[in-house]
Image (cartoon, rainbow, N blue to C red; front, side):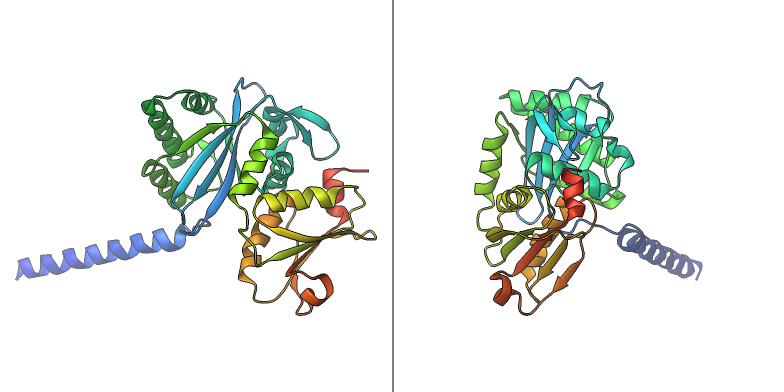
Length: 305
């Protein structure tokens, strides 16, 4: 009988352990990345002392099982939101004190700088990862690229990169990168790269036409936002100016799933979340399924008076 009792105890213990493990995995470690996630991630140095040659722009799609890494010259002069003028790309994070800003502000800063919606910004505190990426892009030896991917996966898995990812997400992403080829490409011309991204996503949101109303009192802001959205696959059918409005607004036609996906990218252009409302008559009054009013809150972020 003692063997039976021991077997029962073992089964109960295993069941309890399995239940606890499932609970920890699914409840205590909630994931912001789903299996349908497609993310644009910028990886930047934490301090201005880094002599890195590049910052990294990663595109990762779980749904398409694809990952690519673009190396953008760190000394590239970029226009910084806030009216600060131009700075080298590698200097933006430390000089603007972005470590003290909320994630939405950090993401919006790089979205406007690079001209593409950025989903997350990760920070490197050791320059070796960025140096290894530069070597991988310059080398034709597959072993160098595999070494870099392994180093990147390790940095993600053990939180050697400062990311918002939880434990489960880090391990899933590290395994994802190691299970498939990671294309590493050096960008030489930012405008040409932006055009390539536009071609890559052409027609992605073809059933969600966008109207943009510039009420921010910043000349050309509507055109700038329109260009960024079109590079992510949106179709902008209307671009107008209007009297000043304080708060930016997003209005969408009800039950437009494709527009909901676009709104997620759109939100990354604003330094704070923008409220979203629905309007059944939106197509009638704006000839679009999605209307974006750019308020002076965005105008002050981009170009303070």
